[in-house]
Each structure stands twice: as C-alpha cells, then as structure tokens.
Image (tube, rainbow, N blue to C red; front, top):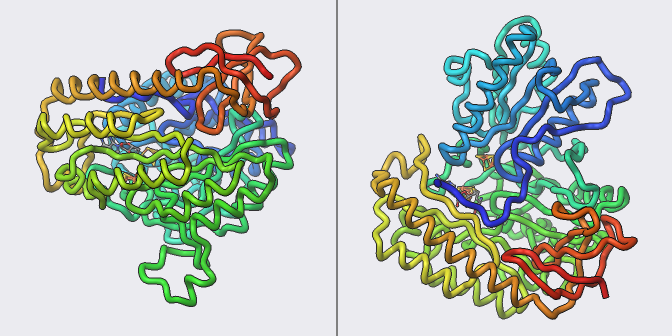
Length: 476
Ligand code: SAH
Ligand code: SF4
Ligand code: F3S
C-alpha cells in the first residue's frame, strides 16, 4: 500500500465520451485520464479541440484510430499505472498498425522525448500547455513520424476554449482558474510538469459558470494547485511585486469567489486546492457571506511536524497551520475540512510521525487523502535529501494515519444524524436504483429514496442512519 484515499473524486482511467460531432472526419479517438481533477479538466479541453476537428470518441480502444492517455507523474505508482496501460494498447497496435498512440499531461512533460525511446509504441508526446497543437501533431504522426511538443507557456490558460463536459452527470463541473505552480514544495513534481503559475481572466471564468448554469449545471468546482494564490492583473505570469495601481485593478481569489457565487444563488461553488500559507481570512469571510459557497475546505497539511514542514518547503509551521484551522472554525463554524498527508518523508522520525497523528486528533478532519512519500526525479528533495524511511515503515505509518482518519470520518458522519441536510442531487445511488444520492454543503454523501426527485434538484434530507462516510435518510 503506498497511497490511500478516503474518497475518490475523479474517475480514473475510464474512456471519456463526447457527443458525435456534426463535422465528423470518420476517425475515432479513445481518451482516458489519470491523476487529479486538473488533468480531468484538461481532458475536457483536449476533447473540445479534437471534437472541433471532427473526431468521434469510442469506449473501445481496439476500435480507435487515435489513443490519448492523459498522464500523472505525482508518485511512482501513478506512472507505473500508465506504463501498464501502454502495454495493453500494444495489443491494439498489433491489429491496427496505423493506430496513433499519444501520451499527454504531466508524465509526458516530465519525460519529454525520452518517452519515445522508452516506449516504442508511443507516437506523440504532448505537455499540458501544448494541447492547441494536437491536431497538427496528429497530422505529423499520420505520416509515420514521431511528434513532440512539451513547451511550457507563460500565458496559456485555454481561457477561450469551451471544454466539452466528459462523463458528466449534468449537475457538477470543474472550471480551471489557474495553471502551473510556483511553490516548489520539496517533494513535488508539479512545478516541473505544469510550469509557472498563471491566473485566468475572471470574466471568462464567470462566463463559463454562467453558461454551465444555463445548461442545467448546479455546482462548479474552481480548480488550481493553489487557488488562494489566484491574482488576475491582466494575464501572463503572476506579478511578484504588483504596484498599488495594479492591485487596485486586480481580482483576488476572494473577489473571484464572490463573482462566481453571484452568478446564481442556486449554483453551488466549491474550490480546490487551498494552501495554508496563502489562505486569507478574506476568503473565509466570503465563504461565510454566501450561502451557495460550500462550507468545505481542502487544506493539505502534509505533516504535523514543523521540522519536516520546513524540509518540505511548505512555507508554514504546525502552529501556523493550526491557527488557520482556528480561523476557519471561528468564521465558518460548520465548515468541513479535509487534508492531504505524506508519510515517511526523508528523515521523518517516529516522534515526528506521532506529531502528524496528534495534529489529526486536534483537527479531526472530515476526509483525507493520504500517501507514502515517493521520491520524484529533479525535485528539491531528490537532490538534497535521502529517501531513507524504509518502505515497511512508510506502510505502517500510512496504515496508522488511514485508520485514524477512518475513525474521524465516521465520527464526523455520525454528527450529521438527526439533522436536516440541504442536498444537491447528483444521480442514482450505486447500491440501489430506488435511491438517489447527492452531497450536502460539507461534501458529505447523502442517500435517500428517489420518489420523483431528479439530478439537479435541491432537497432537504433528514439523516436517520449512516455508514462510515454516507448519511442515509428521507426527504422532509
Ligand atoms: N497543489 C496541491 C497538491 C497537489 S498534489 C497542494 O499543494 O496541496 C496532491 C497531493 O499529492 C499533495 O498534496 C501531496 O500530499 C501528494 N504528493 C505530492 N507529491 C508527492 C510525492 N512525491 N510522494 C507522495 N505524495 C505526494
Ligand atoms: Fe506541488 Fe506544492 Fe505546488 Fe501543491 S503547492 S502543486 S504540493 S509544489
Ligand atoms: Fe495532477 Fe498528477 Fe499532474 S496530480 S498536476 S496530473 S502530476
């Protein structure tokens, strides 16, 4: 076991389907996506670009003319999964020698043209900022040549591309608001795979939220590696030291949140990921002020020990993090909080691991995403520190963290019993066709009898029973 999630947000490795385009070129695309919500959102941009060129999508890669896999490089395990997938595609290439296989996303950016040497099957390698060039790259590959574009950009935000919603429930959608990351956490490959941080024009974000609402969507999640760092000053890289004048005309994350919340009171707004060093009280007051901004903050801590946090280059201490939690509890009393934790980072002692557990006890997170440290090439940690916590110790520490989180999640869920929850209906429950499911503001899943309700409705559910992470009740 090297990673564990208490909840899984994106559908990994599922074929992503688009409506048949009117200008079909007769070619079929098999598209799948691994990694985070940001990657999934990027796949919607890729699908949009290719749909414009007339590509149809298929669920069966044996039927495809082009296979695209949008990859993740965050941990070694994520890359291994992609390699296994490429092995499966080999079978399709045997039956269709003209098949084009492209790798997109973070692993493509990390390995660049080395990918072509390591995996002979691959024809196209494209980084996250180069998706506009996909149609040309396909044309090159169709002539039998290999095609690579891994240029990172200082401006690209794909702001003008209307994403095609993939695998959508028609109710919830992602909107990217920033790209890249300037933080350089010592363990993290993202700054290398996604380049420098850029914010997207707020008008295009509000427009996208508005369009989604008009299409029937009732919830948007604003996405960025560090949403609190969002700052629109007219485009390009984030200004290090903006002038007074620039700041006067700028849009901050708190202001952006408010703009999106004002699109419609029936549009729920979520966001991810918040960074403890940048999350301001302004943002918290904006959440508290607007009923439709969900009371849920994903605030990765990574470790409960200040020495480890310093080595990780996270920019905060345990005390600072806990003071942010205190602010959340004060300003938004019923706010759910979730975390990411990495266990077994370089030189982490048993005592320091205990600090992570004690911080968890103090916060009692609602949800958590927990990982064993995986060394990534080129990162500060790889260059400076030794990955010296043995695998079995990492696994044991991870198991302890996961067990504690399961306990806390169950406690949090139980606290919801006997209360009425406002639930946005997302779809039919996996366990029974007679039941619907949705989430409350705190992002907790709530299941209830279907009656005549449908996805997109808001219902008030009295919670009567629960499992570890789900409330079960009836509409009142
Ligand atoms: N931008 C987000 C995180 C993006 S990556 C943030 O700053 O919070 C998602 C999570 O993967 C991280 O929060 C971290 O917990 C985990 N992660 C990143 N690099 C890792 C590594 N090398 N090994 C194990 N987990 C890692
Ligand atoms: Fe990685 Fe840190 Fe940036 Fe998150 S904030 S993407 S962990 S470098
Ligand atoms: Fe996301 Fe993985 Fe890249 S987590 S940003 S797809 S490395």
